[in-house]
Length: 143
Image 1 (cartoon, rainbow, N blue to C red):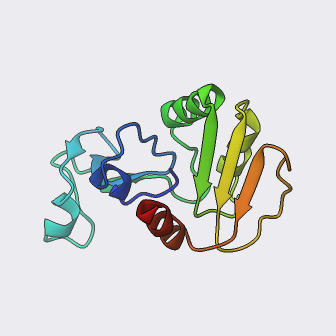
Image 2: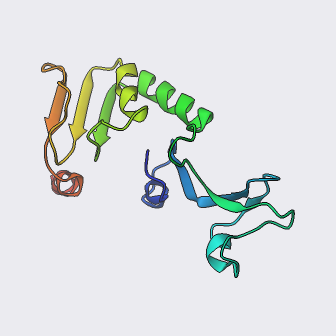
């Protein structure tokens, strides 16, 4: 996922690879010490600090920072092994994550996004559903 909010895990997803990190984790930029999710919100300082003096920040990927290597590798490997790939809520325009679709070797591909994609899917094995993802899954859940 490119989401950083941890909602996939709260919804029950088990194998979640967070390629943009998570706001549920915090760490000291100087010594690497880990901090609980509420540390930043409960800090009395404008900029939360560690006992070593370093800045404590969310474990998320900011603009122009590299993506976490392990999450990227695990994501690509999972996509390579998948028989079916369902991509939801993305226009496939944010790179490098948008390029991960190129690693898919399975037989069935579904992309659910309210706006049309800028790429063509294989007409025999791919389907593009242009509708809000919540509506699509609500409909499927009722079937």
